[in-house]
Length: 151
DNA sequence: GCCAACGTTGGC
DNA sequence: GCCAACGTTGGC
Image (tube, rainbow, N blue to C red; front, side, top):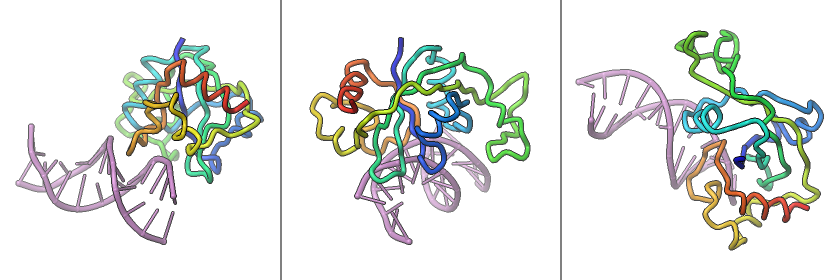
């Protein structure tokens, strides 16, 4: 079982939105590293820290669960979508995604600031300077620590 | 709104 | 295959 951190801008799609819709296809990821994590490494049942980016303050607000096997992102085939990719074909899709389902919402947000202050979270990719990846793997030790902080 | 960091594109 | 230009991310 693998652990992840996924970023979302709350103005676009927040943890409250995920709670409401229960399950959401993680469409629109157009970064190869992030895509590789989804189609190569994610398995149904994996858990992900749900991180609000571009927020004040930014931080982890809950947990989501991988709720599907990887499949081609349908928006790549949709000419009116902003995520349309003319080089993608049904036979050779370029972008893959998984669905995420709502798992839990923290009673207290674990802010980026708090995370930076925690010795035990040292080494987390999201804390490294210049890291903009919207999907990153997280080790269990860090995952558990953040869940504890959010309780 | 600013801007550092980084990924992508495209000319050569 | 290099690299300048450009676009995007995301904290502040």
